[in-house]
Length: 408
Image (cartoon, rainbow, N blue to C red; front, side, top):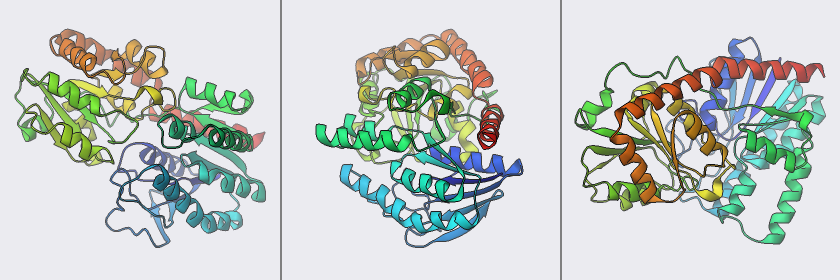
């Protein structure tokens, strides 16, 4: 099967959708499929093109059996509403010649990931030109999130954009997304149930496992053996509501047995560092190498998963899969009736109202004082990851869905 993957993020060494797209490409190539990837140079979450790559050149490389075609794009130093739209549009325009050039290769499936939705029209057009099947995968509902988070404004603009989005989504043979609530939203946008596919984020449960002993990071960071580590690891952007971490840390600074470790980069990091200035119970780490991800996640006694209320059910945080696989308790800022809230409460931890630093601090304090509860939640988290999120099982179901699509 000839499979063309199209999306702005393909950075297997990172986390998030870039990591998932990379792992999917490698997995499919190892299964004997011919895989091509059209993407940008790695730039996220630092918003800076990585060393050895260029934002101005077209390049080709082979990565774990997949051919990766990288195209130019514009990367703003400080992404905002309009700048982010121009950034996404720059990739869509620069990648268009490479995408349309694939008509000679004649892929069997054109798979495109949202965000950015800007890429979807050309992907659907290429599929129509070549007779390929078109598959849209929605990782985030970027249009809804942009309006709900205030990045875009105006009732008329929203109606126009939403109408265009609904028309475009109906052009695809399959539309997949990562959670039940997000599938419901696709139905509300006019996608027939017969064309919807559940394609959740996965985790390599053999690579990320509960540690048998203390994480090496404890010694490296000088964390006392008896301290309880509350860890946030991931992108530091606008959808998470990261200021709640600083509020909770400030409320717990008189309890030295609770130590916060905040790891990652992104547009919101500088603000978070400023909010935590002078707090003795907070340590910051830069993004860590993928080969150390198991040790990093194993550093946590409690994983922290903040999310803003107005992003509920528009995104399902990809970082949750690693938290579950690491076998540690989770505290999430999510309403109980959201899918994130239900998953966390049922399988791995506690939920508190979004953007409530006092409630988050109290939940951390509760778990810090109860190692038996933390252990039980960690065991349940690992069991859920093994049963529902194993990479080979999820990708095996995806491969089967691709075959059904081609035979239809």
